[in-house]
Amino acid sequence: MNAKKRFHPLLMAGFVFLILASVSRWIKPHTDVSDAITGLLYGLAIGCMLLGIVKTTRGSAGPPTQTEPPKQA
Image (cartoon, rainbow, N blue to C red; front, side, top):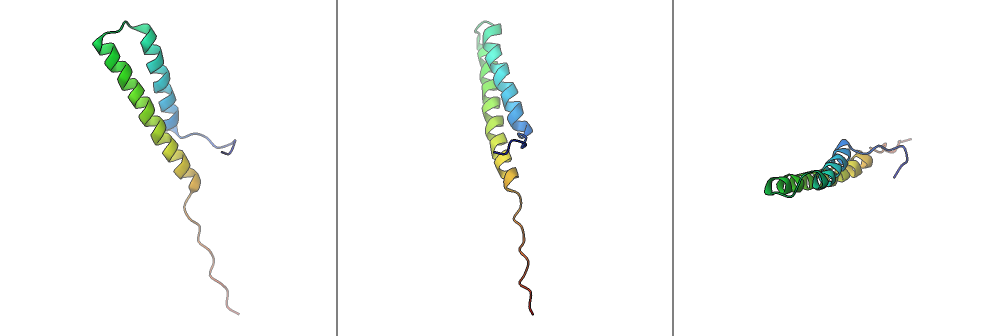
């Protein structure tokens, strides 16, 4: 990967959801609602990261370039 290439914003959102899910396990006691919220945050993190990886790799490929037709003499 190119050092100057930036990550897709969805990938960054996935990292934020992952951090929030990890922190939410430490803050609240384990109840059904807090477990559901933690699971939702982990699910959003995984989904955003996978979609961000797909978008990043497809964006780097770029559209196909057209070749010039051969010149006739």
